[in-house]
Length: 455
Image (cartoon, rainbow, N blue to C red):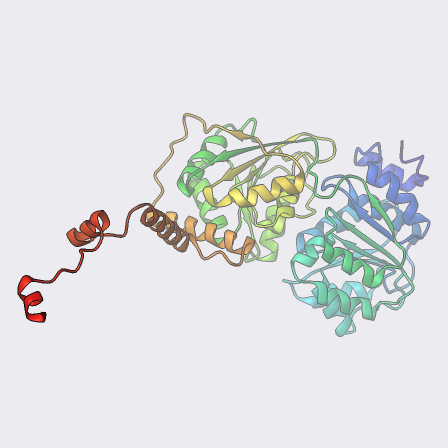
């Protein structure tokens, strides 16, 4: 199938040719006709399969040209990086039209963004909090809203945007076309869809939370953080193969430590992204990495959802994510748009339960490889051992609220062993008890003198 078969008009076909896109993906083949016909649509597809273009192309067709001063379409996304990315994609697809769009997000002053919107805009791309702020300040009116899109809906639920989204739904007109796109369809996302969609068409291309087939997955069992650092340093020495790498970690503190370590130990440019970084710093780091000026990008899960960076060769999970869905989104940063990629995961003893949940979610096992001989395996410090033990206890307690911890488990095991041993051993101790055990109690006798006296 081609885009001409989907009745895409010439100005958008020219834009797609400029981008080197020739054939629509499965989600685009099914979503574009449904959206153009005016249906409410729920689109569930693997990350990296072109969901953004699947709703942008029909939206641009329906808007047609610049008109009025208030937006006719609002696209809600969870992060500032996604606002920038969707804005750039609209600019690329609408380059041969006069359609106006503006991205608004927090972290910068609202005055400049509000000034652009007051000049007139057709499409607004926003994070939920900033859009709600603009509505409350009356810098943005939704009275002529015709289409509302929730992109990466599962991520917005995880980030706690449910309240803001419901408030936006109360302000927006009830008569409009609603679209919801996500890589997973959890119970919370389903509940959200009930709040603003009547009889939607659900388009599910692949089973929920299935990683793309073009991503090769492997894992290494690493006993501690120092061994992880030795392994990642060894891996990144191969600059030709590992030419564009994203390293994912759990926390901002760990991200900073790894960034400082790799900046000293490896050659080539490296950048760091997490929520404490300034807005301009994050956007510039993302731009440099996307354009190929930066080889390694260390990031928390702020980069894991919806970010479209072509030709990412490898994703390295320095830490196993807490949420199973985040693993799917992380490895989805590579192997995009029919390209191949690799995902490498470092697993500690505390991650075994999380890996089991991930494998159950993706319905496949993650192969385990032996550590290379060149990688030094260091001894785990006492404090790190304690931290790993606490992490294991926390996971077991979450799965079983009656679980009391490794100390109580060990104590109960010793008690059971002692009771078992006592059952096998006689309770008689000492000479008297041994005598009674063998001969029984001694019979009572009376002396000869006592008998004579009695007579």
